[in-house]
Image 1 (cartoon, rainbow, N blue to C red):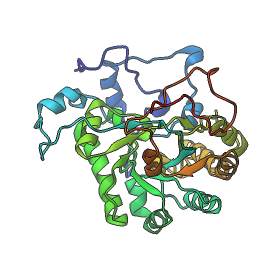
Image 2: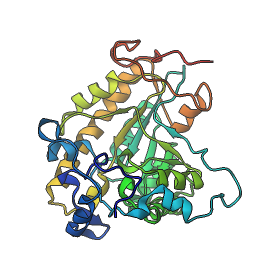
Image 3: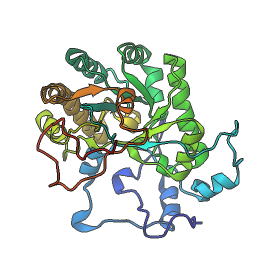
Length: 341
């Protein structure tokens, strides 16, 4: 039965490259789930505006999918749980941030999906060589598998955030499954690194109202981003670096990756995994140029904590501006718009 909270024709059925269903042990069948979903949703985007499967694979991290049902809705979660937090704190104070309003020449470079021995050491070496810091939103499964590498990230002074346990797409998870993904990731990071994480990034930047409530209950702030690689196809290190650098302004949050998300659970010969791996190779190779050229322009690469501390006020968000307004080409220390004191 379709939820009344999901308007028919507004929510899209996942594109064909996402219609594969994974478990941490491997691939499982999903035909029945797709059949159940078709009664609730319709495809959005046809013809020329539909992204090709290859482009979608490269531009978006590969993910699994849960069956949508009535239990996905925020209404169902609210009506079946206590409306008051356990310690009687008010809910709803959880923040979602993608750009910070600041006059300081700070930008925050962040990496999702790791740690991963193929890419994380390269990125850590580049950060150390530049004297820069970053934030790593770690996948709990990878933290558990690569414990020494996760400890290296922590020991070199970078911020650590939660990126779920196995990178399931939280927009399609029922509340109980979503909570497990969040809490299992949190527990893994606590067990291995001794850190109680309060920073969270949802896989693919996707979540539901129910997930936002769960994050608020767990005292998480959610971090999206204002700059990403966003280069069609695999690209080249030069293209990725140019794209990121052209958009760097004080307060920017940059989203990159040091692993392949749900692709970690695909067979090594799988085409999707190969494409994601090629994309991550390019991204890791672009990091030194991003750091060097950004710093040459006067920007400083800092942790998310440092960026938040530089905010003009606790909720300072730089407003969006038209492309022609106050946006000089290339990395700059000029803020997009004056932030109110």
